[in-house]
Amino acid sequence: MLTATELYPLTTALTVVLWVEVVIYLGTGLYEIFDDFYYKPPKWVFVNERLNTYIWFRDKKGHKMHASLALILGLIALNGVIEGAVFRFEIELIFLSLALLNLSIWCMAPPCPRASIRMLPVAPEFHLQYISFIFFVDLIRIEVAVLCVLFNLWGIFVFFRRTLRLAGDPQSYEELREHVVEADGTADLALWDKVAGYKAEERSSTT
Image (cartoon, rainbow, N blue to C red):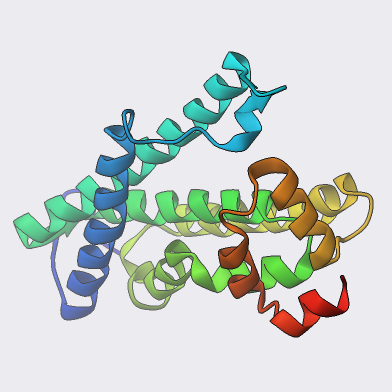
């Protein structure tokens, strides 16, 4: 484990991880921070074909909070790349940020096992977190590593004990598709179908 003031020179593996985070999170954060004139309000912020400013505010707040966390994570990674080395606290912040993002993914995964299981590998933080645990966990304090594990376990616990029950029962993918269309139309339906592996023959058999 590194000391509080010890610099850790970048290895090839850490350099690759940091560059991936710079591209994904710094790029996403910058775009979402400044996308106010390009961001199209989703269908669900309209009630009776009129913009509901309260729902719009809640949606916008979540959007900007995601942007802020992504930007901070990306800037930490960029600083490490520029300096060619990182402090222990910087690595710990990366671990904690990835764990919090994964907690959110677990908690907010749709209550449809077919979609949820297939969505997890699509999230970059899902892979970055476990790569970090494999290669860099020895650089951080054990308390931080345990906290990251607990964040993930809490997200999983919420998914199985709250999210699934909130929907009554685990959803079929057909039910989830109906909810997607009701909430936001058909614009993103093809992407959902692709992630869930929902084939054209399945769609035809349900109609």
